[in-house]
Image: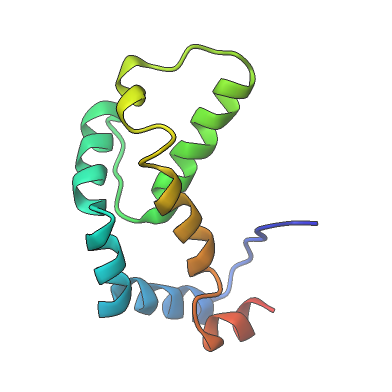
Length: 106
């Protein structure tokens, strides 16, 4: 069973962006101190972090490295996994956050 299938659908991407910009989602991101985390991750990795999908990508990479018994960078000890998990989970929740996204994703 697949957890996430990405297909190109302009309406879906627009609606998902609308959801990301909504006050409700912005409140959740604020509660999770997302902006602070994005800034820290950007400083440490040199990559841009702007939404939960970016955090999910990093989490998946670090998880894979950990599963292969690779050493993780020292800076990850303060954020992995505990601070990355909430936004990683939320990135999946966002894919079907409202009825419109659920219909478009089906």
